[in-house]
Image 1 (cartoon, rainbow, N blue to C red):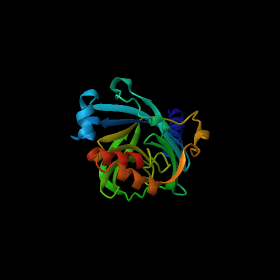
Image 2 (cartoon, one colour):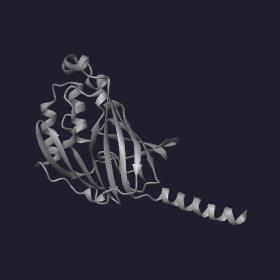
Image 3 (cartoon, rainbow, N blue to C red):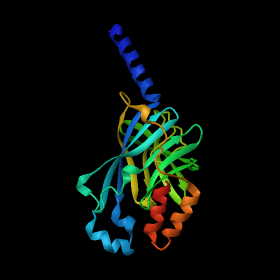
Length: 242
């Protein structure tokens, strides 16, 4: 009996160790938006609310290796397709270098593709004690931060994946963010599965397509263009620069 127990103990330890030190792989996120809440009660809501589903779901992939990651669109759930399709979501790419605190993002904005290089978004996290959740088979802890001066972000991260990243520009926790909720954007991101074998990490390179632009300068232009759009205009700015 002891001879059988000892190899099983070793196997269990190896498996646990592997789970705790993942630093390369691909995560699929399910992104769910409450469209009716996001569009609010303005002119755009009146024009499109009866033509759009209440909720829409898209899927994105985050490929990561060490301190670098690439986040991009994968597919749309056809059952709750928006009237305007993916809205060129496939043009948006986030490249993050967590070690050097920099990012290079390709964004489709107002019928143009831009290449934005900047520092990663500043995120001062506060850990929430005694709140945990299992996501995609990983034990996660809760944390919260504020972005864009007043927008609360609630995240669940796992330290079993050592890369300090997450979807889009989310970063800065001691592990990988697998779940995010931003109530004021009426959007949630949740990891559906994680692949660690056979992942093509050679795709993790900065995008090169688009007009080079300083992010803050473009942000000022977008804010001016959307100032009369009401709540939806503000949400558009947040979505573009997150």
